Image (cartoon, rainbow, N blue to C red; front, top):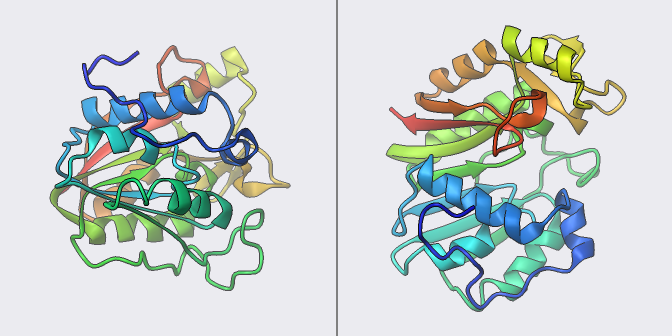
Length: 252
């Protein structure tokens, strides 16, 4: 439900075809996108005039509702490793909103980019220091291994302006989460521990990756990112409007 009083529907942009949205998680594309934007505004304090970076932009789940919200003073940059979503956004969003830009980046992923030689642990975001006021990583760290997460957090800290915020989602593990998982058996177990992370399926490690909350918070602090608030998600059996755990951070 939109509790902001702001129209976050698409602004003159068609919806991507269903077969494309299925490549990025499926579900109700419009509803999920609207809910995500509402939380970016309410929880992250996103303003219409701000510069937004969307890491893992897919086929525009966040970008399309943002076209209704960001003003002409605002700017959006999105990148993804899967070219088909990026190409669709470049053909359908940018011509209607010139302050929205998208690019494909060359980063290895076993499913989406298996031939790339650049590892996520080595990738440098293609932007200058302090180029953004708000960074979004929705359902990104939940599919990344520890050394990759550490580098991406470092990059977030680099490209954020002082006082800028980031909206990050995780599967965070602690005593409460483990108790809920044992009781509710939601389908995600995270029972396989490998070093700093927990895997749901060791045969496909990046299918779902969880982190002890202390590890995740220490990595954020090491890059100068102060946690403003954590919104626990429904994935472990809690009642919550968000499925993954949402962590709002600020560049100290």
